[in-house]
Image (cartoon, rainbow, N blue to C red):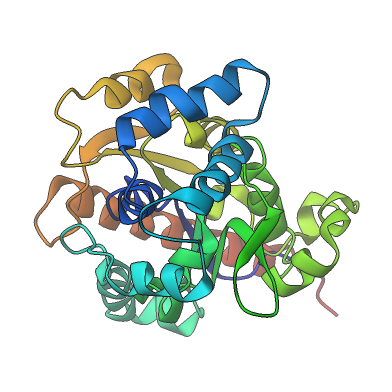
Length: 291
């Protein structure tokens, strides 16, 4: 039976903050244009998955970079200094406050669970302010040796891999369990037994890596919201998002402050899902057998 959770799923880089992977490239003293357009693009053209390409190239380049090797402390320092877009860190709390002002919602236990689903580096994102705010953070991950040096890639998250985390949330599989037993996401579970229906989900993202999640969630009656980062002056990615009915609304500028178009739309969508949960509860009560 579905519970009263509204699952808010967000991409991170370009959605909540500037690209942290690019910030790491700059931190290593590398030329970002050469790194992405020459080095990483060359691997992708050779058949590499894009996340594996950039992660592997980061490890290679760090070995001889002016900034030194990749270490856990370097990733931690980068995460500690990530600056987020306006309102991005507290918009979920403000949405929760709006729900809390409605007695029907609180009596029915309606709540928002916030998840980060990113193709960025989880080892960086977990050292940002998001770590204390989101239920879980899913992203690419490095392997470290006993001295906390990066020695390999533990996990990469491609655009299609992101949908795995959506299904895990849908089935109520926790992050720690999913990491230990990744095949659990493929276990059969009847739709009516899944704790977080897709129609209770909202996905926010900014680019091509989000399109499979956009398409899947919108087709399954959830909400898909496109945003564009302030630093994207060309709006090329925003135009691509708007094609083909893959997003439900947007794209909006990544401004999460009260009064912004994005926050006003989020508020309406979240309230609409809360009303849907109340309606589902009422239907379940009416259809329950009486004795």
